[in-house]
Length: 118
Image (cartoon, rainbow, N blue to C red; front, side, top):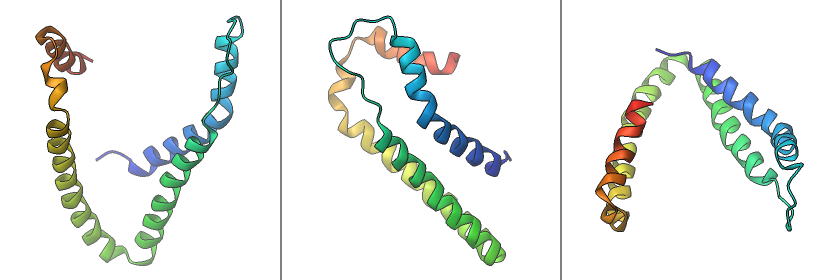
């Protein structure tokens, strides 16, 4: 029961702030380096992320405002569809990444345990 509106608003704010802060951070961090090539900031990718975040959220807010009863039904159906899609993506990821399971067992164990410790 987290505050979804706050989470989405903070994500949007951090994405907008990243448009200016990422170049500043890269400049400050690499100021003393002697690089042979220039660093490029992915402004287009940041903008696409911002649009992909803002448009569906705005549409969802509009639907919730306009049709509050139907939005609860849509939310339940969306949760079920999202859970199924998450399962499909997880299974597809395991099937498509067959070659990566041939890694060292120590590396696989650390990769499994490390997120749990965090």
